[in-house]
Length: 345
Ligand code: FBP
Image (cartoon, rainbow, N blue to C red; front, side):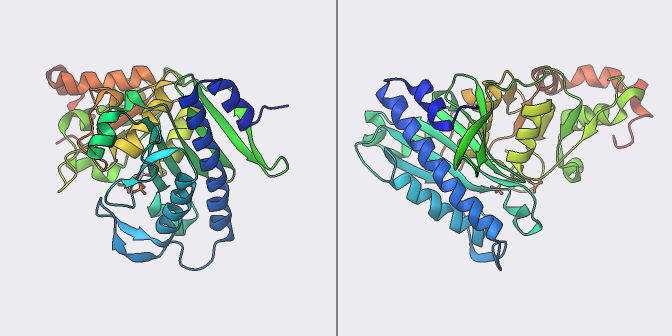
């Protein structure tokens, strides 16, 4: 019989007191995710409606964003956490001052998909709290992603899934109504090194820098171009859904910085979107960068800092870095392929 989330956390945490606190926190998040999933499936008017306010990132807050934030705040209050940092709250919240952990969370990922019944999610990142953070709380969410003790995301799709890592592989659990809890679906997921699919919001093409345009041009040119094979495209508009697909069957996701106002560092947040995704992807043998620098090595400027994000099959993520690092290599190549590139100016 598949092992339960409880049994998995027991084996991952052993007698390490801090790891046991991470385990307790993930258990409470799992209970909260079931509660939120029940609200989503119950549906009802207004879940996708604007609440009238905006969050720290300037995004319109929807009813479900606020409901989700409340549900996970309650789970945080029941957990050994000193600090709670949420996409839906401007500042980090002090909970239990002496506790050893802090959690950053995107309570409802994929808000633009709520009213269209498309897969959405919750993304979380668990960090240690040191004395310097108690002295200056503004530092707690400026820790690099490599310091995460646990991270993952819930997927509210046809099934309720939990994808998580505590730094020792990436594991997938499915909520089993019969069992009344999460059971293991994939003991140690591994990302294929070769990608056949890419995910990017192509409507932003004209705003991208040349290296990203050239990289996508070459994917689109497929077997008639320098890549000499065809690639498929997917874009769900929910980071959790695009990430889970890539964990399962490889591929690459890009949300680059671009020329739009306030998009120089892209759209996604480093602390509670890119860092937990990168932690799960890298622990599954994939790569995650801002185009060139590993996401987990980037020092956040603050809780709501943004970052360009490129993740997935290692060889493809490295190829993007080469396009960015050496655009001249592309220029040399372009005359030959110029006429083939539909979009390149
Ligand atoms: P939030 O919904 O939590 O703000 O997440 C951002 C997000 O919806 C990601 O899930 C997704 O990958 C991206 O933005 C979609 O961006 P766009 O609407 O520009 O395609």
